[in-house]
Length: 206
Image 1: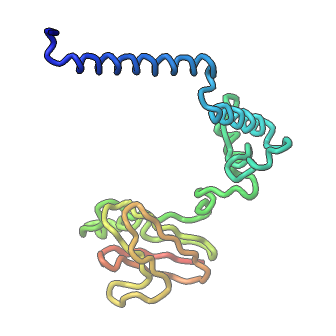
Image 2: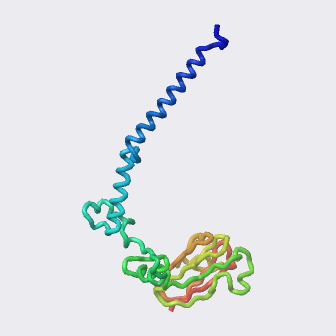
Image 3: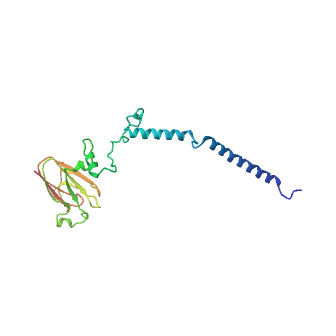
């Protein structure tokens, strides 16, 4: 009689080890037979990538490259700096017709800064709630109010005593946001902040 309590368990373990070894051997044979291209899709992906790079180098003008000629892919869609370029070179490209930057939108505008801390009284004592508090411009000028304070503010035409007069109204200018208005008519336009009435300013259009 065998000293093992249940010899059948040992036979089962032996069979399992044989199956594992056979599986590993089969995987090795497949790897040797196929080589580095384990999946055919891998080779297809490499071929497609190489074809795309070739089309990109030729500005997508080659045969079959038109499928890659999409917005954002072309070499001239976005100005790029090379090792030989300078910031001035890129600026020249950005100034070409049809390319508009955020700076272009307000490059001719007058900026009025809403100073930090204007949410509490005190800035009116030195006329520094809006800087500049008085602005002289010509017709057709755009004025941009930029809120540099942590509190929200308004730039509403009118006076604290008389209320809004309807010429312009920024609505609530959140912290870090801006409001712009183009002055087309001549005259003197007083304005103030609806929620902080000590903040007043004037725009004179000549």
